[in-house]
Length: 517
Ligand code: FRU
Image (cartoon, rainbow, N blue to C red; front, side, top):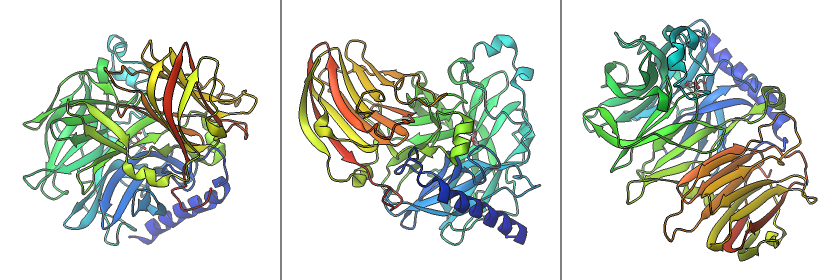
């Protein structure tokens, strides 16, 4: 490591440490979701289990709470529950192949040695979509699909770094960039975010997110014997832009046993397909589906742990304007680890990793609760802003069931999760969650059609400004609220148009950082 690069890292670490002292007491800051000590985080990168620790890396601008010259931040945990901040893993080397950013990627272990594969961005020259996509095609693309980083393609390359000291420091490889250019003959939009796995033939396989101009988003499949020499094979899958946009970021490919799952982030809501992996190509068994039904979830990344369990984390964005989060000195976090499985029918199941139960404090409330129209239940007066709230419906003969949280005593401020039994919709309503201007308060909504005999089973993880909803192990909804009133801590359950009985349990959640916040 050169002296000047060592200094770059030292300055970056100092910037985070200086800012950390200021943000620690911010009431909007989550305490059991992974995040930086201060300033900016976006995508989860390179989750890996190695030598008794879970490691998570992430896109990190250590200097301000805003997008910028991105390095890889690093946290680690012995148990997925207690985490510690580690020194920043890598930062851009000014003037080099990664001078404008060390972008998203993966970490794998080869011959006992951790290898990080990331996208180097030499320069942030932006490519104009309008230049390349005819208006007729643009109309076919769902709104909001290309408002992010569409870089000039020759700025993106794939790079390697290795660590010899338990992932505390990383050396960028002398052969970087190990993939210096796009495959010949393909006219591509993006070229980034390596996702790696090893197959039975002992070789590494890798996806890169991209888009073929005039065709659609694509995951490009590569192969390597040693992580240094890479051979481009073929597109794993090319999407229809009407369904999945023109360019894909952060592809993930999960071998779930009976099926494979392809996940992409198409500059809009992340989507997935379930299907078969046949002769190095993916054959989806149906249409793309949304991975999360909130409004802040993006760029998920996953790992298969030593027990064969697939865990996935997503980036939880802010829902307040840039000037507000930049002023706060921190922005965004990651979701809880989500376990991804298939059920007997081959459908996707998603639930929080079982370890999250270890974060529970002493129960605040646990009872079978009966509600009817006009009779609101106050759940034993339980209160809080960092809670797990579980509501399993035993019987319901009503139109809608509502769980309110972050409610002020006078009822002025609150957020509510409502299940409408007639429309089979789950909605998160935030119109009264804050009086802070310009915060997004539009409802999040999804369809949740209950099968015959299937009971509604909701879990809400509340972590100051973060709300994660898990419904029937089938759907997640990740969103943000920014209650401005300190006394907005109350909870209640009620229903309209009939009555319902539900098992409700509420726990306070401990910080993952070992502090007492
Ligand atoms: C997705 C993304 C990735 C890129 C990274 C840059 O959010 O745009 O494609 O590698 O973020 O921080």
